[in-house]
Length: 394
Image (cartoon, rainbow, N blue to C red; front, top):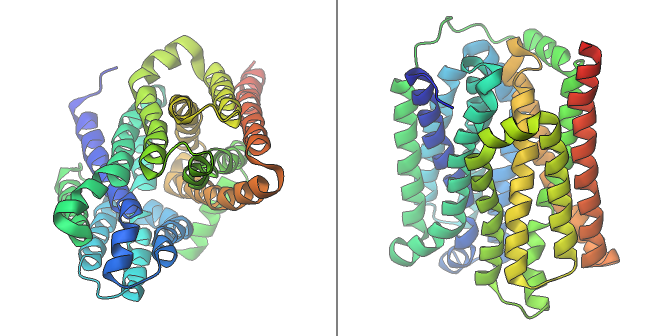
């Protein structure tokens, strides 16, 4: 599928920005040990820097959504990138863990305006028939940012140190900010006035939209069922004597590889399956992957199953993202912001639920339950979002 030069430029700017912001967020993960040693801190404390980024990212969404709708997403987007670049540059010279925590909170808040605003901008500029393909191309860059942050950052730290990695993240984000500042077409309307009453009215329209409520519920479950597992993969491999951080990193990377496979196949998948069967097959593939991992087949097969799980996730999640951009077009940023909020809260809750379930029910039963939930999620999504909609249309 081809796009006009203006849309191609938009996707390129958003892709670079999505890569940079995701790299800034995920680059901490392989650096926990070296930061802890350098700042004389407990590694478990330093690991919480990931939470210090993720929670502000989620909880800033209800604020940034109305700001984007009122002032203009094109205007807010480069400001968020610039703030993220400044925060990452300051992280690189942080003298203590306490200062680093404060700066990671600022970075998370700024990053919260990048990917959700990107989805809103694609919704504004790309017609619905081509939107899922456009978003999938943007997501490919985000996935590459996840891979680079989780793996490449660790290799780079051997040469430039953790501070050098943060400087690199700041430079990438600053370059993206410049591109967004000068690369977007001039907004069609002047900036509006930010009003709490108007913001609440937009959220009221979004929340009272039946389709939006289902999408928020589905993406909340999506966050729990797919991402609650991730922190427990490395300990599970170690307990089974199948490897350490290297093997766990490869298994986790399989999820991102599955996302890249989806990005390469999305045009064909939509043409061959349609949206309804995309949901159904996505759920079945994801459920099958978790059922397979519940059998503890060894880390190499776990890697292959994680590729399938990543493909499944993006078949479902990218479809939800595309649908949410159209539920309330005149409050698109607010609608997408609530979507991101629901997803990240689901992720945070999922980690706790998986930990409790593995401790009481065991690895196999927990993954089997999560697999059943993903199968049900795909089938119910197909019925509610496609089947019932077609029924009403007839």
